[in-house]
Length: 78
Image 1 (cartoon, one colour):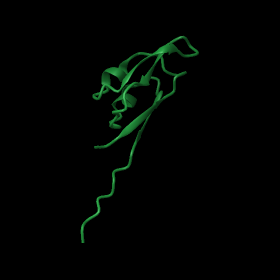
Image 2: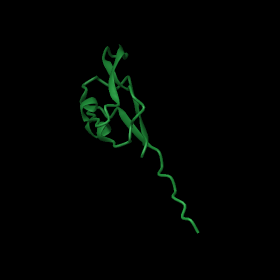
Image 3: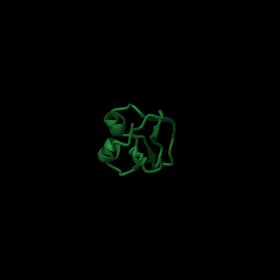
């Protein structure tokens, strides 16, 4: 299974929740705290991200960066 993670720029995020709705793994949620602009920001709430990038594609503020772990090299038996 491919694993990924997201980094959300908390001070850019306006808490629109588009990324939360777009996440098929339900990995994202709104924080209980607020950022410097007074918004509750999105954050990673579960460690089951697959790196699908749906969240980053729908973010109107470009506040999300997705990192995907490289695929493991499959060694062929000789």
